[in-house]
Every structure is written in C-alpha cells, then in structure tokens.
Image (cartoon, one colour):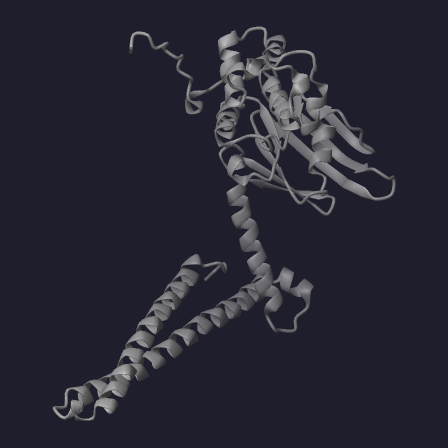
Length: 360
C-alpha cells in the first residue's frame, strides 16, 4: 500500500524562503538632495513647507506622522509622480528609483497570469525561484497560473510589490508595503530589505516591521519635518521622554518668563528637580500610608491572638466566632495591603531608576 502512494513534492517552508534584490548600478554617495520644497493642493494651504533633505546611499529611512501630515505626498514627489510648487529636487548620480503604493496594482496587465507577470519583469530568475518568491507573498501552488484580472485588490497589491522587488533599482520608495502581508511575508520582505545595498524610504505605521530595517526617522508634523538618527523604537522613547519633560515643565507652579527659562539652563534644572522631588515625595507618602495601616492591623492581630490563646476563649461560642472572623478578615486585609505596599515600592524604585530628569 505504501508503494502505491504518490509522493508529494515538499513545499518550501516560508521561513526558508529568501531572495535578494537583483544587482543595480552603484549610485553616488548623495542619492537625492531636496531644498526648500513646498507643496499645496489648493494653492492656499501648504501640505509641506520649506522642506530640505539629503538622502545618502544605503540609508534606510522611515517616514512617520499622523495621516494627512504629508508623508505620502513627499514620497510621491520623491518618486517623480507628483509635482511640487517651489524648491528644487536633484537626483544623485546613476540613481534608479522604484516606487510602490497600493494603487500600483492598477498598472498590472490583467491578461497575464501571476507567474507570467513575474517572468516578464525578471528575465534572469528561474521559474522555480520566481515561484518561491511568489509563495512568500502568499501565491502558492496553482495560484500562480491565475489571471491578474481575477485577483482581489489585496492580491494585486501583493503581486505589484513582488514585481517591483525583482526589478533592478538602487532607491526604493515604499508606501505602506505591509498592508496586505501576513507575518511570514513581512519577514521575507524584511530580510530582503536588510540585505538591500541601496537607499530605502518606507512610509508605514507598522513599527515592529520598521524596527529591524531603518536607521533614520523623519517625522512629519505641522507642514515641517524633524530628523532623528536611530530606529523607530529609539525615536518613540526619545519622543516619550521629551513629552514627559514638557508636561513636567508645564505643570510647575512657578511664575517665570518663558524666554528666561529657555535661556537659563540652571533655572530649568532647578524647576525639574523640584518636580522630581514632588513626585518622589508622593510615592513615599503612599508607601508610608500603607505601612501605617499594616502596623495598625499587626497590633490588632497580636491582641486577638492573645485572646484566642486564653483557656476560657471557647466558653462563649458566639464571641469566639466573632473574634475568629475578625482575625481572618485582618489576615486578608494585611495580605492585600502588603501586595499594594510592595507594588508601590517597585513603582518608586522604577521611577528613581528611570531617571527621566536630566541631572538627577
């Protein structure tokens, strides 16, 4: 019976699917230079205002910001598919750009199959390698023979992304590339981008995906940009601490001129230290209150224990039951208070270790 069973071809595990970008021309060190760029859609209100940037070869950059802050607008301008109102953009030497967004799926040839689309894009890859790549982007088995015209919007987006990644380039601009990918597909894309020698710009809200790739963050806010060197987690920690410090400074009840505070580091340090001591004192006060409550319960507990050890304790049954109930209630309250006390001790220790105020 075993001899009659047809052996099935082993399907490659997604975790082992790896591909590298096709070789492209080595660009100059400066990939793109943007000076004083502004953009408006209605001729009145700017979406982007006086933006200046320099992208270097090999940088992996994340565009972060709330929806409508201009991230996708600038990515389209960089890709050369959207005009801008003022300023200049200069491409570096031998730069080959490739742009991906969800609407790139509209440019696919609907009459071709999925596999034919990939074969026409990548002349050098074998059919087996192309099928492995497609498998990584959730096109498995006979799926690759489907016509593009019958695919859903999400499937077309995945195919457009796979197609772009097998085309030679040295400057990738990716706008929300992970929207229709599962975890294994994200890992495959992430690995490929990590090994990519060119420059990458990624517009995404997927911080976990970005963390393993990027080394620079550009935040979009109020028509302007700010630049941070590091990954998205480092940036978020920096931003979080900055916001905490801002809240602390704003909450200090001291009348002082803002310009004097900004220009006087000694005064800033003094104000921050006062707020730090204020919060530290609050923790210690709560801890002290718990300790007083625990001490009072311990005193009552000892008194009840002395009563219960008396030889005449059980002569009055009703009284004995009442005392035993009170004793058990004290044990329960004491246990809960000790947990809360320990937690508050941990909070104080963590607060002091965090050392969020400079100079403390």
